[in-house]
Image 1 (cartoon, one colour):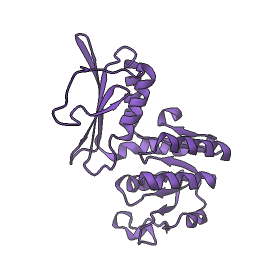
Image 2 (image 1 turned 60 degrees about the horizontal axis):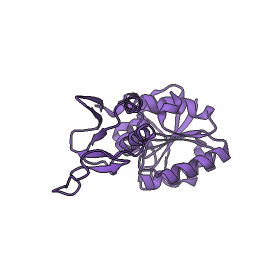
Image 3 (image 1 turned 45 degrees about the vertical axis):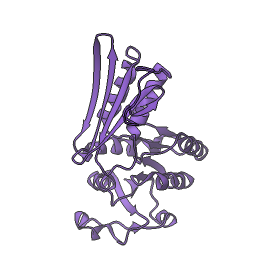
Image 4 (image 1 turned 180 degrees about the horizontal axis):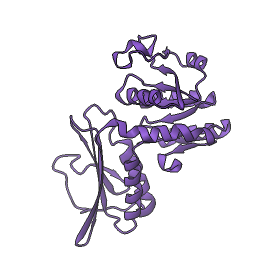
Length: 262
């Protein structure tokens, strides 16, 4: 069985990932990590009653569990350090935390190459989200005028979402830096037109009741195309997380995006 440790196990995504590991017969949960946890054993939490695994609050202490995979759903500042720690000890990271900078990813990819250790940083583990991004990249060849509307729950820490930024990067590879809209337009309320990335606009919606949704809207002369993805349950992300856990140990580099493992 593949030995897995989950960082951020008390958050909603981390808790879902922990349940996923416990449900898969080829995975072994060897521990969970959170620097501010007060529990000593996972079973102390009501939702994990009867499911025993040590709780670690210090990075170095996790090495006792000898994990092969480090699943990370924490916060950006912690995730960068956690991923570096994992790679330094030849533990394959599977990271769903968003907010990594391009410089962060490049530095971690260099470290992974030096350590000959595979891993993955993915802004979204939903298969439908990956397909949405791929289809949007194809559409941008024919419809370079595009805007992105991403919608998430009101407790999300970053804006735009990592998925929206990744989508914009992929679209920019095709359409380049292309200003769009009226160059003389004036915002009566600053920010009304959203964030500007390579000429395209990104709009972030934060409301209770939402989980993760994104709409990529293209416009052409006399026609339009909308590609939309909706996540209704965090369980949908776990197919991609499990896939990554099964594949990263065969790699020797750190991938930036789930599409590289599909």
